[in-house]
Image (cartoon, helix red, strand yellow):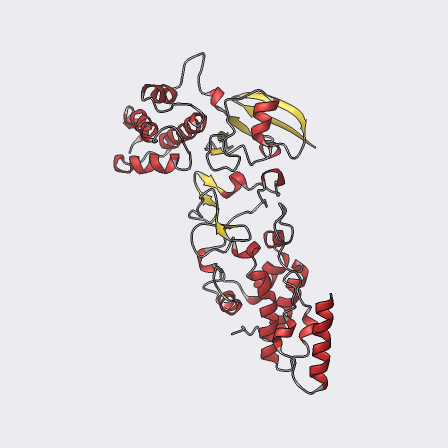
Length: 171
Length: 204
């Protein structure tokens, strides 16, 4: 058993006494009722289970939750899909995904939203050239599997959000 | 155990007949154990003895636990079949993964058996120049002795790495039903020390 506390979407949770074999995905879904994070493949292949980890140095990255123990998130600050909308308002990226009809069943969408948000925040700090944008988006979203769509509209939605604010995201 | 006794008897008979025991005898039939350095003392030629010692150590260096993270390409390998790692991760610029998928994202500081994911605080790939995949023990030996391909290490530093590094040590506690490397890290260290003591000759 391990004692664990974690910050999720700005809210402190814990301390909890959890078993060492508990995955973060089960912890989120079963213990906290945060079912927006999905369980897809259970092999860190599809990344529908990915959440954002906010690092102390100000950077962020996504992490699968299906193969990672909950104890591994102890003391960390993370964001799940539930944390993107504020005061009932979807984020810019979420709105773009809706407007572009980027998803169908929605199972992979939390992972895409988290990954896309991390990309936006990275570009805001380290913009890329317009010529590199498509490759940058493709590399960022690479690894996220979607069984319903052909990924194009996710990509287009991301591109449109970035191109709508070029001074912020592009060099 | 019976096979080891047969080997020992064969050695005794051959020595009694004045014939040098074949070096192959000292690579024990078991792939899970390592012969002790003393068992090579019967090889009178120092260079041959040295090469035989490294060949025995090569059982570890060519095992899946080592080769999977010393791949020839930019993707780690997985499992006893040494298949390409799934998910399809890559070494990145520093061997610790690409920016969006660092090794430590999934590989935590310890094995997580419920998901079958091995772990260690310094989980990462060996540099490309230290690729061991599809290489013979002799080729690995030559590589290990080459400062341009061993991270600029002296042979003594190689010994320290092999005998004391905890990531190397993971090979013997891999968890998840994975086959440990042969022998123990201490036994491997003893073999490498003996190899150094006999001139660090590489097997052919």
